[in-house]
Length: 279
Image (cartoon, rainbow, N blue to C red; front, side, top):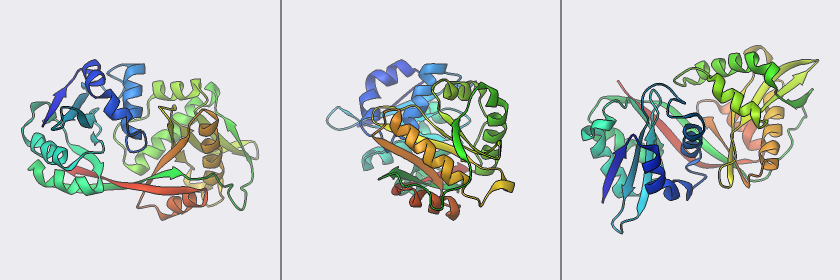
């Protein structure tokens, strides 16, 4: 039983692709990152080389995956317990993981990994993965309507995605290439009221059976009017129309308002994830 690490995306796909795809719900973020790397190349998230890893279990099959696209955290998939312990040891010894400054893992695994890391660390974010059990319309319905964003909205989208990143503490700035890709398949929606955009929501490409909604953002001065619920409802419906049978989203557990909004739209909890950063 062992972890293998590489910079080679093709080698990772060949060895671990089926294992990554076998859990499209728990691996939704990881699969989205892989899709972006394949579509836009290894510099999709920055100039540093991505690192890919997979755990080979006792039977010789791959039973766990992880990847890192610096400066983002090491993204840890759904792992069996021996793989968690093995990854904890690798964090302290594997040269390809030497530049990892943060990790994102399921709550039950994060503490084990942080303890094995051998570096002082702290929890910097806690999130919850939700799946849509059945889409419910927001009540009361917000004023306005949803529309698909276009190339003419690119500057606004870049500004709002940057603002979302600052509020949520995400590493790296907004990617124009990523947003243009979203626009190419209708993956960004705007909620308009009185002739102007007041909120946005996006959805990623459908991968396997799953599609994830995000980001969702309303400028501070326009909050509390139901716009985010309206545009999230529209984006969730668009994800179904794009072919998804599982529609997902992540929320910040520090934001009870957004968690309440998504539950009222029909989203139900799947699992919690924790981000741990080295001090």
